[in-house]
Length: 237
Image 1 (cartoon, rainbow, N blue to C red):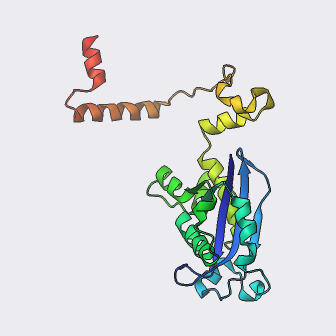
Image 2 (cartoon, helix red, strand yellow; image 1 turned 45 degrees about the horizontal axis):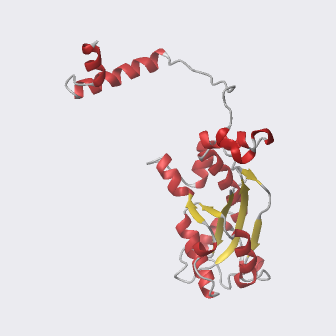
Image 3 (cartoon, one colour; image 1 turned 45 degrees about the vertical axis):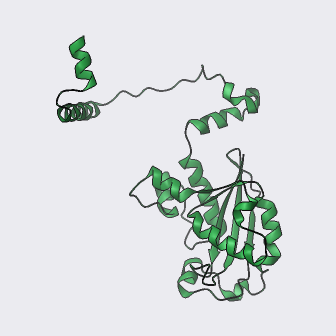
């Protein structure tokens, strides 16, 4: 599976209001392994950044003056992402800008060039409802080192997003994929992998955890007026 983590920096917040992409980065992941086959472009947006945006990314118009325009990098970019799953944090924002840039060139919507677009922000909100789910907050929560992120930069943010996504999705699927990458497992036949030798550590509940469990059961029993399944089973026994 080929996945690409994508991030942009822009002159402002409104693609429909004339703001443009000034930095674009793609970080490639294949079979949950970072390949270091990445793409990174600085782009002349043909306009100045809003003051608020400049404070976020720190990329000046003077720095971008001799950089290529989006039209000059569009084909290389689209060839790189072709057919991949694209993972973006707050995807509607970046996709909106990409769609505007591609429309100017008559190249259709971004989704028509890739197999799938996944919004990692939406994933995080499902996993951590009611919590802060920005990239910095997720790095802190998941133990991803973001100490070098003093300003927003598309390449650094895409690399951090890759680490965050791997942590967000690390579970049984990740275990099977990692184990299946061993040449002895037959690669594509990982579904038939023999895990009989895998030893899982069983951690017994503490006294406080047992007490909390009993308290929850009592509350459920009370709320059901004594009609819980375990009470019925005890009576039948």
